[in-house]
Image (cartoon, rainbow, N blue to C red):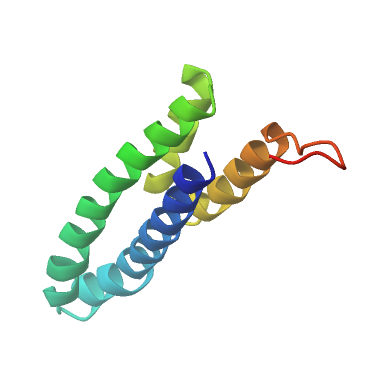
Length: 108
């Protein structure tokens, strides 16, 4: 499950950064500066990465046995600026809390 969490964490950061660039830089440049090139580049890139985010978030939720409601919230988190960062931290805490460490003195 740790590898699924690692993949999810990476894509959550990528999607979050791309969404922030899109909303805070590219969109103002398009509508205020009449420069649509950045939106034309970052928009589709964010869209593709968001699709990867959906697959990886679903995979993590399935492996962690999350309910549909919780899984839905994590899936939607990639559409709201900054939410993917918060969702990533929450997912990390949930997964790490679910992993029970082996008792001291035992070997795996």
